[in-house]
Length: 220
Image (tube, rainbow, N blue to C red; front, top):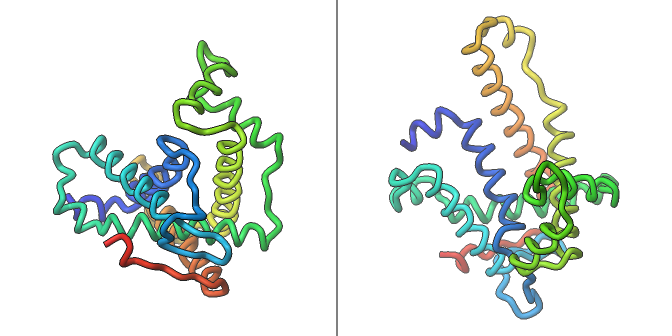
């Protein structure tokens, strides 16, 4: 199964982005980071042990739901899930710092539009304020906390889109793969691999200019 996931790298990485990004909402409440054990420091930003384990649990649960009985402890070890979750959390912090250096931001209007159009807060085709507040309450979040986290996620996505937009297949790549549906899927997969490679290079370069401390022994 691991080999199959490697062959479909596009879907694996897209899935992992979804897993990591969704952790900021479902099941995550406010944390007292002043007294928490820290697993990584990225400049002035810190990743607490509670934040890490919640992201890790979310990742495991999501993979279990998707792959059912095929997602075994052995497969989890082969995927190096613990390390990968931590690396993705660090990547998100690096992207936020890079966005700040680039002057990228998200307006109040953009945040509001994202909330109003979020299907989790819709009923009968429209946004329901009472559903919004009730859902946040169930997840132990205030509107300010959720909107702050949502803004960070949207800023991070802006940086990713800028990096991805700078990458495309060459005309030769496009011609060589043909025009049928299978060729289209092959081009999309190849483009996803190139864009993820570009994003990794961008993150690595940005990270090299920052003071980053990682305490991996805390998650072993």
